[in-house]
Image (cartoon, rainbow, N blue to C red):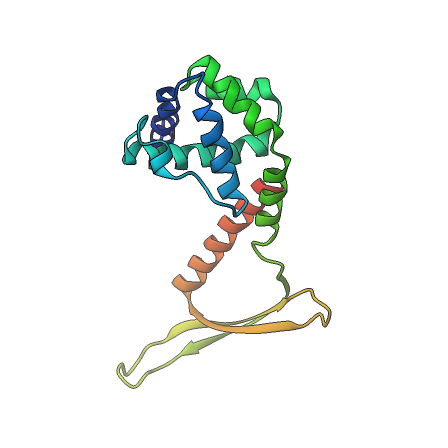
Length: 192
């Protein structure tokens, strides 16, 4: 169990502090989803009788994360409620699941958010290798350097592209490659 999972679970447990019949958990859930869509989110003063400020912040972050993961996996009330029931009482988890399942606007907001990560795409790569023999501060270097030229296209009405030129040492090149691999894995997970 990771630290992140423990913190998220602890945050979700704070839903149990809301009365089932008061409608507070539904109001809070809808407010969190409103915030995800760029509208006004939950305000602590509306919930200060049920939770402390720290619990409010933990709950808001944990529910936000849970909702994002729920929309990636399933929109079915029963599956969402079952996932919540690990940390939240059954009646409350069912009500929160119902709130989540009816919010198609959140699906659209999350889709727009993920598609605006970047519209740019790598169009061409050119590289050459050279060896730096010396510098003004060090007499003899003999350090291999790669000149990397990346042409990135930005789809719009003019289909313009931009060129980025980088000069990297071996370690810097390895860091760039591992960063690009990590990015590729994330993109593959988002599109799967």
